[in-house]
Length: 348
Image 1: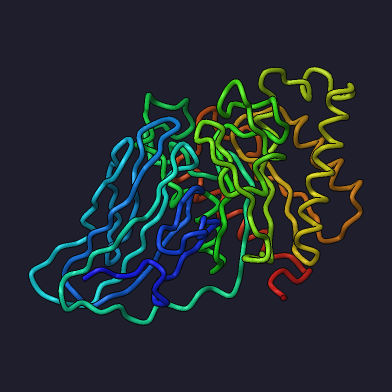
Image 2: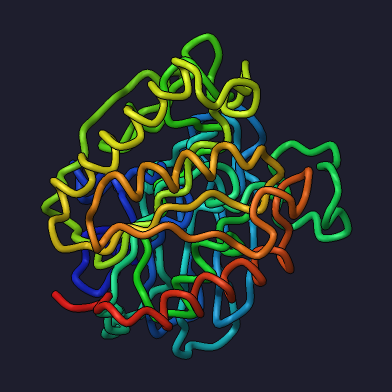
């Protein structure tokens, strides 16, 4: 039997393109579909579009994590589960990677006689993260390279489930929108995203589709999701091609970056007047000048609901991407900091 992808029993989480509710398009890491059903088989068909790397679909099927490599383009059929007898199942299907690819869910076929069950209740707490590869969980599964440079890879080690962003959300019992892209800086023209375009967060932050190699660009409707907590974790990629915050922190380019960063935080405040906005970077190695710049902007804003947070190993934890145990430690520190705040975080 074919299950309509806009069924009321389906729970979609993340910044997902639902323009066609029967063909949802997944762009951002940690975007997910969860559902429960009684039956013995579930087959998901999806279409994939690649900008770079190989693409993988992630899922938890009755508590067991799985992944499948997707075709580079066109349709892929994924058998989520197949058993001999009917019983209750709980499935979470999620996007492991950032906009190195986009995928469209086309159909979900369940075994004959199956029925969808009432979904789990959504968390009442809501978080949104604006970040780079660390927030996306890029290369997180290469655990033997903790504290080291990355191994050679083609997307197989990236898993948003193990990003500090999603781990923190789980620790806090919160829903997550993870607006993260590997290599992204704040400013257009810096960073590592899709040369020669070099897209920055100042372009990406209010979009659903944004990757220049995938052509389509669409705006996000901010009325669809209002977070209690916004984490802004960008800046360290602005050091490419020139680390001007290290080489000339009092110079014109550094001053311009701080001006644009303050404007960006102001744009987020306009969208979310009551949110707590937490400014930070990550433990990925970078010059402390970027964190000093963030702190200066935070103080200049004079907004009691905009705060600056530093990890114990901020900017010096590892030369490579953040592996699972390192992300766990980051999430532990971040969740403890948020839980220890005296100002209200989760009030609507």
